[in-house]
Length: 375
Ligand SMILES: [Mg+2]
Image (tube, rainbow, N blue to C red; front, side):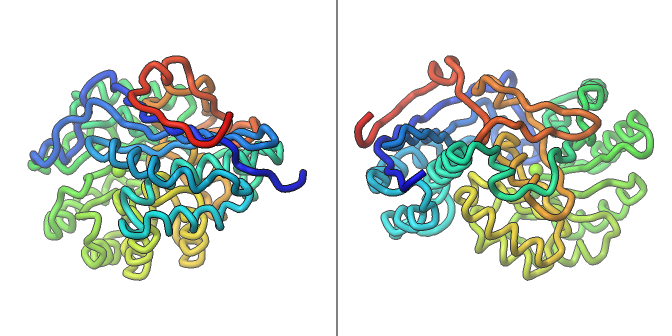
């Protein structure tokens, strides 16, 4: 297929309501309110040869309108470009918004477009994105997070853990990081006893411990044979994470909250984690994610991307070391297709691209949209 040209771009802002308010430790320490919705920035790209790609970025609690506004300012730069030249197009969009930097909202706005370009490229090749990138596996170990939040009483957490395992999900993660670590301890013990030994169990403190608490409580948690302790400390405390990772046998995972490859590099160079948890929409898309993945593998790190399994399943499948993918059903109302889990693993779909189309409900939840080029 000869070179193609982007002829049309549609951006939309979609507000997904959650079934119930969600609380992690950031809410219990009073830093954030319970989460009631997630705001998505969707980018849909069409080419002269009638190829199509769709991608999304997202924000929780604040930032959605800013992502949409920035994307709207730079999207006209796409018209006429060859959609296969993703690196070149990415740089063009970066330069268009250079004044607001190469991290955070600025690149999260580009992320939706970048992901749409990768989706389009894989569809054009007739391949699932994982295959286009070069997959190491056709399925990825999956763990559930959505059942283990702190707003849920422990009996509900146990019930939902059992349901996740019955549904073919391999691991269970629960939230900790409450002001009273004794309550955390009771919940971890209850879930470990409920699951029995051998079922992969992780905990996530969502950055709410200080260094002494993380070390002391991390030692208490060693008895539960956890797969990892996630975000024990402030996301930007690279040195604190490194000291903890050196002191504990339990692996340390972090990285979901940082918003660029550069910030991840600082964590990697400090040896802050055994497992990195980049989030492609949050760090600017698939293009920067792939650069980071190469670096992470070079440093011998494990990978467990944060959230957005619809995108990360493909990226995890293409990572050399056996990764994990995080299971959340929250995005299901947005998409017509479902990801399958079997024997503890999530199966990479054989549909071309990311393998998703948006629902009528997604269209109904659209609060703003704009278009560039010609249909
Ligand atoms: Mg987390």
